[in-house]
Image (tube, rainbow, N blue to C red):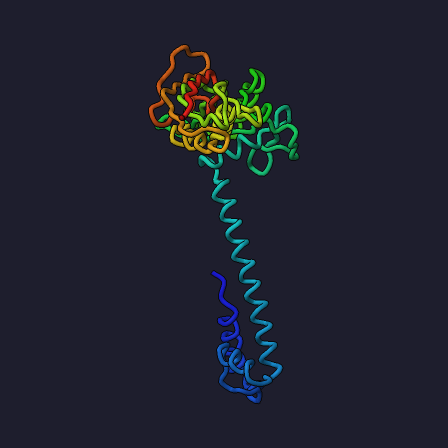
Length: 284
């Protein structure tokens, strides 16, 4: 932890008093507090000002070392081989179509090629039997599953870079589908029965729902309370009282919807809107 300027000044002064050749410098007994007091009342000896300047430089160097240490510790923590943060970093470093080379005791790419890094979304988790990676590319700002060829190549990449013998399950599938039914009480002065804001002609409910779904962190939680809060934020556009009457989701490829009572996570890591049904009720 970095020492203060005053602490460094007192350290320098203590060292000065150990040097017999400097005994002639006055005052013989000094401190950072005494220096600051003397500066308010009179001129002080030049050597005391140089001691103070040196203390400032020592403090600055101390602070820089603290920052450097914290940065190194963060890198080491995130890159510890075989940890969940390491799995996430390794997934993001995958370069589609580039050759892996075994060098410095590990498989790696000869150079960084950001254009080949197709993994834009990733989460890592573990069970008793395996490490689970959910991954996705990006299309139009949204998660999209890897193609068959991309997924096969990505799995081959992980078989080389992962800890030997570890069971890694890689998931890259289309977004889970959400069905939402709402009762929306609206201000007739601001909104029509069709749900459109009178002045802008936009639909604030649809906008709020889509913005919320798009904003859910990859492999994060879809929370009904947060969605209600987002809808309440549309009061200036005409929404007065939003009620979620029902909400369900299903993984892509499944025909079975599961009710969302409070919150849910997606098998794919992300959600997309399948159906939004809104019953608009004038609040009069």
